[in-house]
Amino acid sequence: MKKHFVWFAVAALVAGSACRRVETGTPLGTTYEQIARPAIWRVLPHSQAETLGLQPGDVVLSYNDEPVRTTEELVGFQFQAVASAARIPMTVLRGDAEINLMVEPGVLGVLPDAERYTGSLAVALKDVLGHYGVTADYDWLAALTGESFAFTARRGGCRGAWPGGLAGDYLDGLSEYYGLTFRTVFAGDADSARPASDVQQEALAAVRDRLSRGRLVLVFGVWTGFNGESWAVASRYDPEDSLVYGYTLGSAEEVALSGAFEEAYEVGHHSAGEPEPADMLTTVLTQALELGQAYADSGWQSGIAAYDVWIGSLDTVPFCPACPDSGRACFDRLVWSLLANKESANRFLLDMREAFPDQAEMADGILDDNTTIIGKLTGMMQSGIRPGTPERQ
Image (cartoon, rainbow, N blue to C red):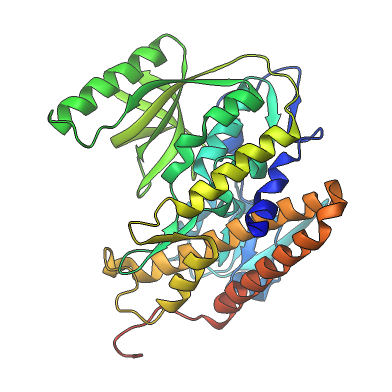
């Protein structure tokens, strides 16, 4: 119980930074544009980037004399340059200084800053709040929705960071603490006797109706160019191609809703007073317990237990039974996601030590545990360990 308490007590930090008013709102997509800028989060071991001396925090300004505005553009330029025989000029910004480099054609070997943000609902909420003129901290929102701590595992199945899970069940807290309101537009019903295509068409019509009236809509579904489902801010409906467009993690520009979706909410905003830390603490602690128990009957585990299951499955063949052909990519993404989640949680704990000095001892214990796991994951990256294969076994 103490660990649950410490993990989520940090969400009670509301002094100034967690929720404050600004004079004007920002355009939809602003948060996604900021996240997508070509800043470096991690330099991969044994990579060209490591040889070049690139560092976390560096921002790529230009590649092959072309200005770089987003991570997507940088990836595109690298692929275009693969056939080049000559070295390529690249400029990065480090602090206030510009550094000019000559790089080999091909992949640099860096993880973009965007990989730090694994909670798609938290990012969507941050963007919506910014549109309404409220500045919100991503880590705090991720904790409130359970996404900072939602690493899950299931024996015999794919291991992964929770893409949505119970996150949508935690929207009420945003209404109480940030003044957001959520009206259900669509909530999927797996037991419905109606054809799934009919249900989806009706749901899509409801989303289009809200967008045509200038309303904000939060959607959990499949978006063009991305595997799996994620939360996104639906921004508009285009009658010319009959598609809904919105912003989601991984892109600085609008993308189309390309597949089925499970949830959609019309989002509004009203003024909200300063939340009581004790109330918020009660909310997140309750959610922590729910998160830990949610899948007790179905074989799923969460938190540290999930980490143990995951580590124990490294020698399984294939690593991801549902997607054996992409096991290595699945493994790499899991390492990065878990690193991002643990570091996000540690940022909370460091803040908590400052705000609640009487709980510093408990915070230190969890910080130590997290730091150990972060060290193990970093060691995996450095050693180049890969999930088991028949040959290795």
